[in-house]
Image (tube, rainbow, N blue to C red; front, side, top):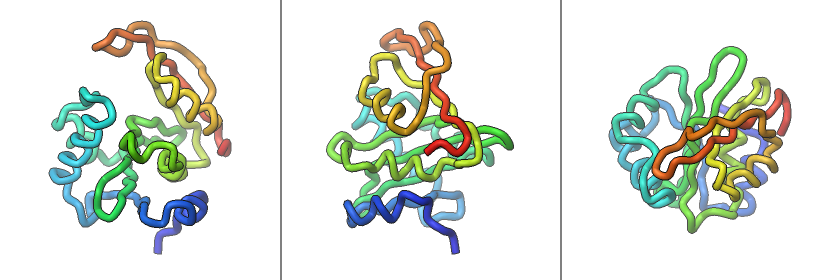
Length: 166
């Protein structure tokens, strides 16, 4: 039986209706159905989805990517997608519905990230709430990518969390 990541029990006591679980291609939700749910969630969070449906399906079907879901009585309220190699992992996307933000759902999703690898991510320079969250999660800025994001054009801040930092 799979063991929950360390922070899950702490999280579930404060929000018992929210279920956090790792998704796999063998899960009870198929890729096409999950893609539709992710697309709706991203539109609710960003108004313009940073990923197309085709990109989401490709990410979910890839063997090097993993996905964790947050659900409230069957409603998808948050998710995390990350890519993992032998030595590091990269957060590809994390989103939580605005009405569920501030309930430590993103923290519980981040508990699925490997503790024994460096973790990288990119974030829009203007996304102050995300930057604060990542700093609480012990990520530090290591670089900037000029004009990385489009619509609107904006720099990306590259962040890293060291091995065993939680």
